[in-house]
Image 1 (cartoon, rainbow, N blue to C red):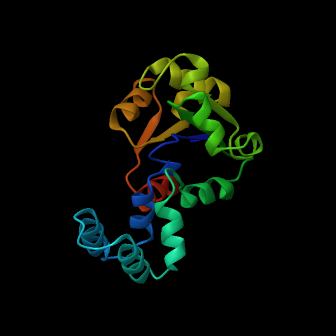
Image 2: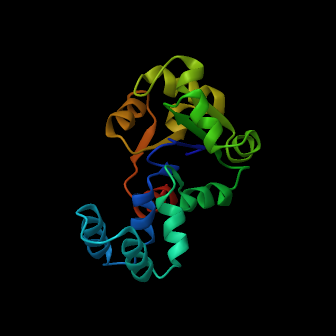
Image 3: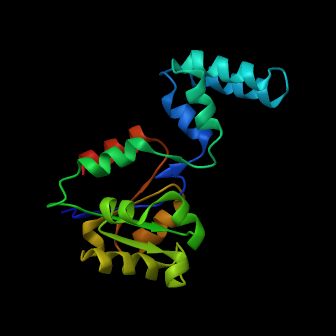
Length: 186
């Protein structure tokens, strides 16, 4: 029985602005968004034209597209909504990330870390990095769960393999739709 879900930070809970735009793109229109981005990259379209074209395609205000594109890291709101929706009497939530000390403070307030997560393990604090099996073991210890009761969500396959090496289940995150489908079926 699953008792804990552990999320990676970059590529999962936070991602690039391009990933955010693709996620907001209507079904079947991602190729068109890709073409718009390529036209901008090739200098065929100005930044203003790019913002307007993307906004029209995504059906959101131009200023919202600008705000997204100007962020280095964009919060994956779909996964944060999932975390908030979990019955915290049944499931624990952790974050395990290879991350530096200044970066985590830029992304999360102390209150957010305490509110979203029952336990965190950050590489800079523990002197280990994924996919070292010991870092996953530490995460499970902090959550008070056996590895077999835990799922790791990471965008990098070798990090998923590190989790599986100690008996955790692992989901290689590629899209919210796929990840949430797997999580909801476990």
